[in-house]
Each structure stands twice: as C-alpha cells, then as structure tokens.
Length: 347
Ligand SMILES: [Zn+2]
Image 1 (cartoon, rainbow, N blue to C red):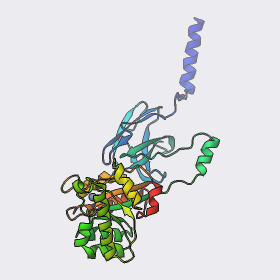
Image 2 (spheres, helix red, strand yellow):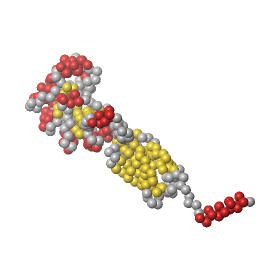
Image 3 (spheres, protein in one colour):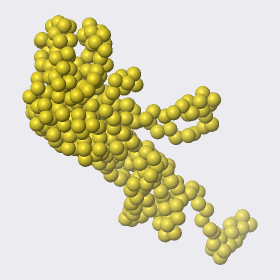
Image 4 (cartoon, helix red, strand yellow):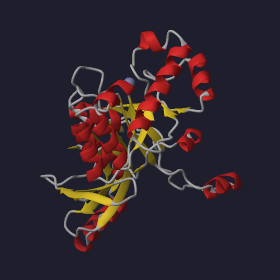
C-alpha cells in the first residue's frame, strides 16, 4: 500500500514539474557512403547518409576541388525534414575529372546551426594523383622527402606525320594559347609543304625527324635504310631552315623492341622520343574531337607527359580536340614545353 502511494506521488510530481527529455544521441552523421568513389565524368554519383539523433535537420553540401577550394554549395532540404535514423540519397555528377572533396553538413532545421559534418573524397575519371592529407607527425624520412623539390608538371604536345594543310589549324590553336609544340615531320611531306615547314619553325616550335617515307617495310627491313632516311629528311629540313641542327627523332610506330635500330640512331647522335599518351587520333579514319580529348584527359598519369598527336592531312579532327585538352591540362597545373635533346634525360 505504501509502495503504491509512493508511485502515485512520483507520477503526480512528474506531471506538475514536467520532465525535460534527455537527448540520448546528438544528431550525427553515422554513415556517409559514396556508391562509387571512382566515377567517370558526368556519371551520377550517389551518397548515402545515415544520421542518428532526434532533431529535425537539413543537409547542406559543399564541393571542394583538390586544393580544397570551394566550387559548389547547395542545400538539400528534405520534406518532411530529415529525422533520426533516416537515410537519404543524393545524386550529383561532375563534368570534369579530378579529385573532389564533398563536405556534408547537418544543420538544425530551425536554428540553422551546424551540428555535424563529414567529408568524403571522390575521384572523377582515371585520376592517379593522390592528395596527401596530413594525419600524423611525419617521420624523419618523410620530412626529408618533403624537402625535395616537387616535380613540375610539364606537357609536351607532339605532332607526327606532317607537315600538311592541317598543320596550319594546329599552329593556330597553339598560337592562341601561346604554346610551343614539337613536330616530327616526314621528309616526303616536308618536301611537298616547305612553306608549312618554315612556318612551324618561324612560329617558334621545334622540328624533329620522323623518317622520310614512314614505310615500315622499308625502314625496318634494314637499319641502313632507316639511317639513310633520317639523313635525307635532315638535309631536306636544313635546305628550308637555315641553321637547323636538331637531332630529335621519333621512330614511326615507336622505338619499342627495336634494339638494333635504336643503337644505330643513338650512334648517329640522335635522341629519340616515344610518348606516354597516345591521343588515339589514328585509331579510326576520323576520330571525333571529343573522343580524342577524352583519350588524353582520362589518361594523364605522370608529371612530365609526352602526348602523341598527328598533323597529317587526314587528321582533321585533331586541331578541334586541342583546346579542350590544353584547358584540361592547364586546369591540372601543367605548363607546356617543346621537346629538346636534353629532355631525353628527364623521362
Ligand atoms: Zn608516324
């Protein structure tokens, strides 16, 4: 009986004074998941956010680039407001590839006060570069490594198989961006387009040798054939450009596995250059400019990068792809240089 009375008194007191509800858990992002942390440009990306807590909240997103510069901010008010334990999915997409950080803020629905935030890193496109986020005190070795000068980002745009009427379009684009490129010319085309050859030189670009005929059967059947074609092309260039003395060579099809030919070219005093990225502009008769740009920009994998293009007469879409490629590389901190003999040792 006494127990029963005590309970009744307690209930009465609770009723009179009232009990302030105690928050068991504050609003917090319990889970922030990205459906796919490595996406292709313009592909939808989906985040799942799970929260805990008992307030009604709103969600705000901010997107930062790899330098943590804010590039996008938007609110995502849910109706009815987001509540504890809910999970929401947000779709967004990036049109440029790179590394992005997405910060998600939970805000009190009424006061707008940020109650919790979390960050997620997303790679858009085939981005190999990793950004270091300092977490712990660096070791001595890491400190020493930090002091080493960071690699500069340099892109070398190279054009093979010209000169042709198409070369003018390439020159126009390069001129617009004030970029100097490297042109590995064919002797047979230089012979037909001497004015264009001269223009390449007068515009300040570098001219290299790409054999006379480009005829694999002939030049690779005997090393002597290759050497005589290099010499023939060299003489031709010299006849058009006074003082030309470059010893840069690009093997038709690349130097890969051509040990004997490489030795002969070395002996002749030439530096030969392959490429790190093939723009793919010869993979079909006419590759769309979009495709060429994508081939290049989705494959940037090193700081110093030699990119292969063609300025042969038939490659009419290559000049159209250049602005997007150049701007994409500029965005990623690259500058442009032509190849010189000394470049040989820097790859
Ligand atoms: Zn070629």
